[in-house]
Length: 119
Image (cartoon, rainbow, N blue to C red; front, side):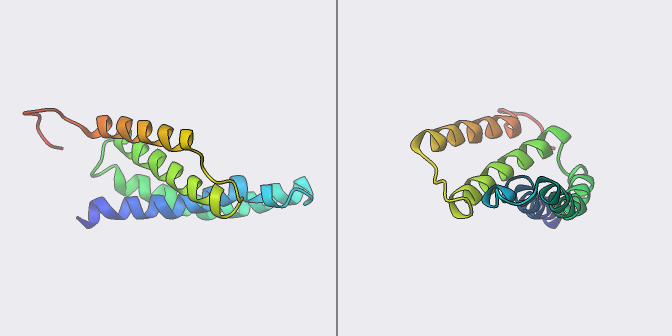
């Protein structure tokens, strides 16, 4: 159980850092671009410090495609919360509809069908 949960928790932490590195500066548009780039790279170090172990550990219990799907779903959930909470840009109905479709796609990524062997 821990072997399946730990990579997901590491991916969650990694995506929080990634989202701040990539989009956090949008709240401070007057900051010099060079400063923003350096700050983003500094934050990205922590993202990589969690992402690399998450992928290394996760690849022992998930296929690489499943691992990437998990990461993308986490990215969308983190970004949706970040957009509304930090940037003050709440989601609209069409965003929620798109997320439902993505969750359906993620389900299909893990679905093995009747009689299929489990990984």
